[in-house]
Length: 146
Image 1 (tube, rainbow, N blue to C red):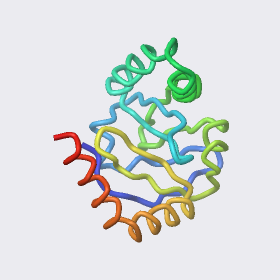
Image 2 (cartoon, one colour):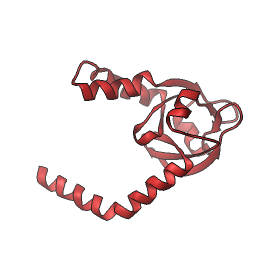
Image 3 (cartoon, one colour):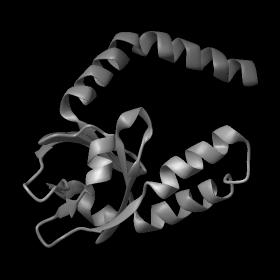
């Protein structure tokens, strides 16, 4: 399970260091794809195969399902984690997430996310401000299902 957040800097070749705590579980080959909220998702190859199968089942569904399947599948790229623990992020993905020189790498359970530094700060600030309301809303949703 991936947990924690780390600030890292891209080098001149669009490589970023993967936190050492994440490397073992990610493995030598990862898949990087567009994520929600304009971040990037990074999966181990094994976890990506499971995700990709789920999205592949959706490509003939309704327009929203097809759109998300295309967003995640067509935008994905395999990348190798080099001996120094760096991964090359394709320019189209870095551009999608508006990432400049610095990025936050966050562990989110089964995946790693890469965020443009200020976007991460803004997003987390908003979540922190609204956490109580979110918890209450989610609590109501759970009780409505029971």
